[in-house]
Length: 289
Ligand SMILES: NC(=O)c1ccc[n+]([C@@H]2O[C@H](COP(=O)([O-])OP(=O)(O)OC[C@H]3O[C@@H](n4cnc5c(N)ncnc54)[C@H](OP(=O)(O)O)[C@@H]3O)[C@@H](O)[C@H]2O)c1
Image (tube, rainbow, N blue to C red; front, side, top):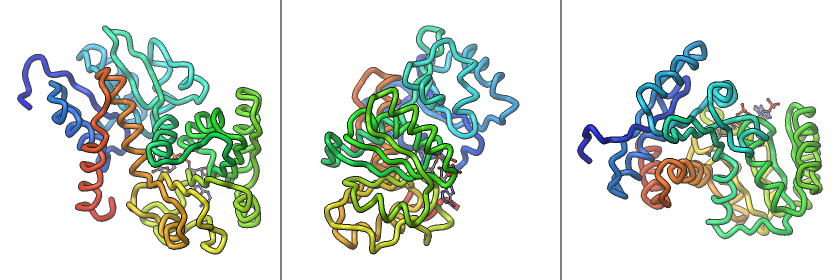
């Protein structure tokens, strides 16, 4: 693609951003559809967020992804925020709509699409979600709407309880929150159809850790670990070895990216090409140390 005076710029802002996979994923997608767009990564320190958004306005940057630590702080600098992002309290995608900056969050929709595209139906299912951090919260908002029951376990109990209370009321569904202890993970897993790990346990460099003992896993369980570094976590490996269905973190990464792509371009994203690009990049990097 030739960069010209008409090229639209999209970017990710965060700190750090050196290891982000978003540029490779989105540039491949733009090329695949022959769109005159380019994607870059900008390291923006906490105290520079306001200036960065002002800069994005004056440079007419078309779209932004927002990552740690700005996902919540960026909200006060935008003109409009989508209702789901408002409820979740985080924005990871911004569209510059003719000078108006509009914030969205695509993590939750990305997780649900990852499950569905991999043949996992949520309707009538019991889901056990580990974690109540940023990603878990976004996932919980989308999953709670579709399933029969959602149980959230988190190391910090009050976060799981608070999230469960909000979701239970909002969607009139059975949602509960509790401590993420070994005893409760084992117990709740017995009744679950789908397990989602949305904690950072098992992420590089602690690749030998998992909150789930392999003996608690069953072949009729579906396991999604949203961690994508390593490509296959210990939990995913253990789940595969008992014959459970496994959905990897790469799937969520690609589908949340695809949702951002759709917001910026109004076109369906070339998911296959995006998946190939991030998988290749991760394999060549080994682990993102
Ligand atoms: N695939 C994707 O597209 C995608 C998207 C976003 C994030 N992620 C991955 O998801 C993971 C979480 O990201 P996040 O943004 O949600 O981070 P976060 O907001 O910092 O949340 C981290 C979560 O992990 C829990 N946790 C951390 N250390 C723990 C431990 N030793 N034992 C038990 N629980 C522990 C935290 O519990 P407390 O509340 O008690 O601290 C919290 O629930 C990261 O690995 C990230 O790379 C993947």
